[in-house]
Image (cartoon, rainbow, N blue to C red):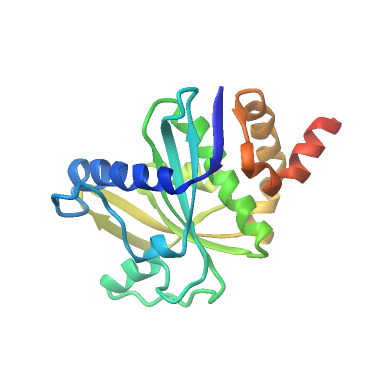
Length: 207
């Protein structure tokens, strides 16, 4: 059994350390430093969703950033390559989708689904982010599509800039997501995230 939840303060500390191990040491996107964790201004305003195993160890996580005074990380990355993108000022950002252990697609779909559901719960519609080029098809299945030919290189990884519109590109994937929820539901305890997906869970139990 696996357990989904919004990250606690203690979870966040573990995430900051995992980010360092993966994004600094492994992928070379940040310089190595003595404190061995990565934390920035977006962590003041974002939320993290985590999936834990039966021993309560974080095995996957994702971050969602609402509209805020710092802007959005992926849009700021575009500015570094001299690209100005006319983004919806109310856009949210999905970022840092990270699977630490196996069953990557299972956890990835569950976390992306939770982020989309959370954004809908907040009244949002536009979602942006960056995704690894080699898994762009995964994001397309979730309703997020590459914008133009914007390519970003961060450390050892090539990314594409992605955008999703919940009404136009995500909601048409509803049947696909419901099939996934049915698969997840027997293996995943949704915990305190269930309030963001209660309509879907109700529909699942009614069928």
